[in-house]
Figure 1 (cartoon, one colour):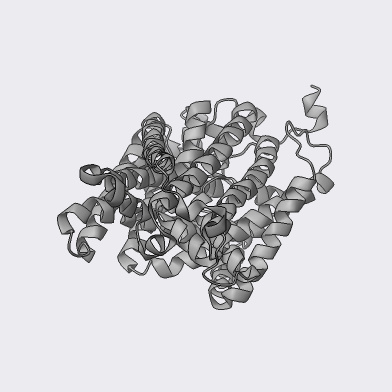
Figure 2 (figure 1 turned 135 degrees about the horizontal axis):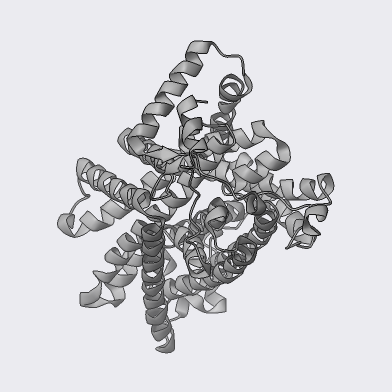
Length: 494
């Protein structure tokens, strides 16, 4: 490590990540990351694969229930291993560096930049829609606006953790208000007798005979709308009293989102036939055009605001993943540094911003979404399997929350079935997703495991780190080991 960095540390210039995330902001991070563009897009895919209105609603409810099971497992992991970094930190702690690095590699290389790019493009398309009512917005215009949005929110996150969390709070409220508007209008329609598609005799009329494979694909579509339920675990070290507020936020947020999603889908079917919903590329906008009349403009704006908040949430949490990876030595040390005054991980934020802009420039983001979904879902299963392994490997860890063994086992059975049918239905997509993840193996052995590299390599890294420090005005943070180290029985009694 650079000697200049060590001098800075010894002179007392080290700072710590600020604990700015209370219970309300913690709930806003979970809700704000889950509710992005998914609920405005995914109902079409769920209905298409489920084949009926009734079964699609069951998929939405069960999808929320599965997320609740997963989130309870993550609550145990989060308070047992209270480090930022989520899945990556837990898997690294349990299974070792290689498995953790593969999750980190796929997330930093593909998963989060692609998701951010898709959400940013959704934002720019809805913002530009009023100016291009009779055609699609120009390619360059959508990319330019998406890039401006990414750059602006990166600047906000670099400037202040408090600003970033306040934006998340405000836009989460805005998202919920937009969905509440849809739900209220839908309930009014139902009270007026417009619920033909919801009658049991009609709701379970199948447009196609449902197969297990199609139902599995319907669950995958719903899981895209629910993705983000584990994101609070990525910023554990910035949560006030994480061993209390982390599980509380999870237990409040997941049931609330499940209720809102289910009622929103019921509202959609109160005003649209299944055929109309399947023909729509933006369900909420079609809903607004049918029922809101002169106020139909509210829906595109609501979707734009929802995606804007989603971009902020993804930037906030994905940058902490880079930060955690660098702190473990799996990424350049510069990414583990924070600003001397603002206490924000500026280098990590800049890397996330740059990777997203590169994906935006490539253009074919939609082809990457399927790979992202597979890798994301694979990481959930590996992490929750790690919980079971940790129970056996380190039984003396103090677990402030200890869920019943039935919860992770039930989740893993469901996960294995869903993943199996995904591999059967989309072998090429899933295979390529696995290949993307496995490309990290040689990178790990060359970049991390190989310690005796030529001296010139270390000198180059040292020089780049030094310049990065000067440009970004960053130093290594101090860690509060009492809050980031797992508790053993002996420590708990001290």
